[in-house]
Image (cartoon, rainbow, N blue to C red; front, side, top):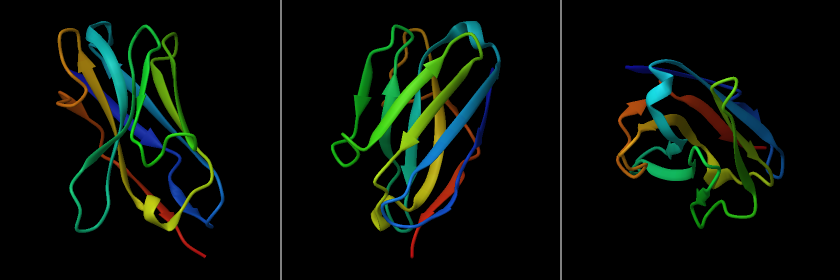
Length: 120
């Protein structure tokens, strides 16, 4: 089992920045990819960004060029740097982890989520 704990959410004005952090614990040796999903009110959960153990990244078209995912394997952490935030980025953001052989479009492990609100 893998446990994921997110931090860094909050209220930010349009155009502002936030950095989300996710700490993994438990069977971390089994983790291949990590990433972030989000769910806005009344909408389906969607993949925001993912990063493999080798450092390859994948981004949603809606955040490409504004968000950057990174990973510190030594600290078992994954980060999401968000810039140029828009009101439509408002959502609960979830950290995910995928074991070897898995697929980050169908993650096995989820964090509890952290709220990001973009509003003036």
